[in-house]
Length: 118
Image (cartoon, rainbow, N blue to C red; front, side, top):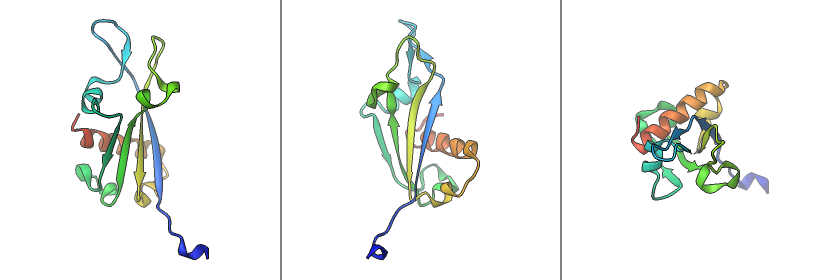
């Protein structure tokens, strides 16, 4: 009976980035380019083939602003990093990459392409 079930390969990547500082308060903040691109929602859903990245030709993904979604990532005065999570679906090509840094670079490129930021 289990032969009827199908699955999808998923890869989850958490990106911890150096925060920017608010010009007025001096408090840590999400990168302004990311915050502006995601101001309407803490989640961005993306289809396949974004950014002309070969590993993502058939891979869709979601970007999550963890500061807005999970208490453990809320920004405080002591915040040393801000976090995004990128969940890739139909991610066979990514799952085959053994170098975590390579996967992180692809995730960063995907985020930049999806949010139209540099």
